[in-house]
Length: 464
Ligand SMILES: [Zn+2]
Ligand SMILES: [Zn+2]
Ligand SMILES: [Zn+2]
Image (spheres, helix red, strand yellow):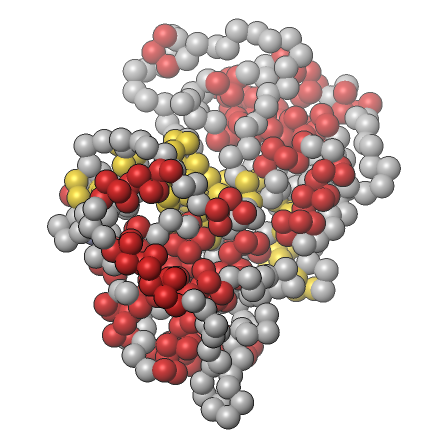
């Protein structure tokens, strides 16, 4: 981190130039090529080169397939139109809403959580009261998001709502983006900044994400001096704020990003309004450092998902305060994305003072302890010592667990999550899981894990 936020020794107001020694000509060539209006060639390029930077990008997996424990497979219950008692309307969809009032400082977080800081976990959330299972303790839109199309699909994604389709309309001023409707086109004010710049032709999700973070962070500032003052104050106090530097640099942040930062910086300067805002050496150097800062924190904070299950599109998000949830292989909360909203749902009873943990690994959490540990170490730079990773942590179901009446019910109704949301069988399955988790949630075992998975399915599953 030696270049980051360092000022010149003889000019105390000016940050050092982090881009010294960069092959500017090389970047200029790349950009020249991106500026060419030949869309077909561009499309081909995006298709045939699967973005080397992003393949290395460390990310929190979100698209974990949830496996249903199956002892004896039974026929999935028919639902929707074929089943008596349900009308023909589409079943209601899961839409996450905070179970409690909002936190004063972080509107995405419920006020039952407090931010704590310590040497081992950095900044993290703890419960300031007992929290039941099935509560939504965080919901919010991403601070920044970026999409890339990986393969030669004839489909487009709507820049505003991220819906995927074919008959989309374009922007009036550029040929780089699509919208599903006139409404989505008129709603997207952010695109005015990128319109006619090379932003949408950039191939790296990481660079695009850093650019989006900068664009979002500077929103609301009419001049660069105010912006710099604001950020310098945050940096000096290492303070938390929703739109700014909530994501601070950590030991695992990396600075091998100079070339990428330079590309992101040049792309930003390619946008007219940004160029007008940052028009002096001092302000330009600040912008360069802001880009570098954001790039350094992306790897440990990014969320990853496939867009609406379309494998041709990849999407990466940065969520503000929700990035403070730490990892645990036996977590007490589950996080995911629904319609672009990130949310966090409690899956085990949480006592006052306990930390909230989520699983960063997706389905990789099922791998052996050694695999998990080396993956976590490599990706996020820490050693997990959760109850599942502790030495001799083979945990067995207790007798109370196996003899629990809810367990018996769950075992014989485990496919009832396939009923429509809000239907009686599905609600019953959810409630039996919740009861089981309330009684045995403190003791992590494979059985408990399976009940947690079913509980999540009963709450969130949607027919595809
Ligand atoms: Zn749309
Ligand atoms: Zn446009
Ligand atoms: Zn662990």
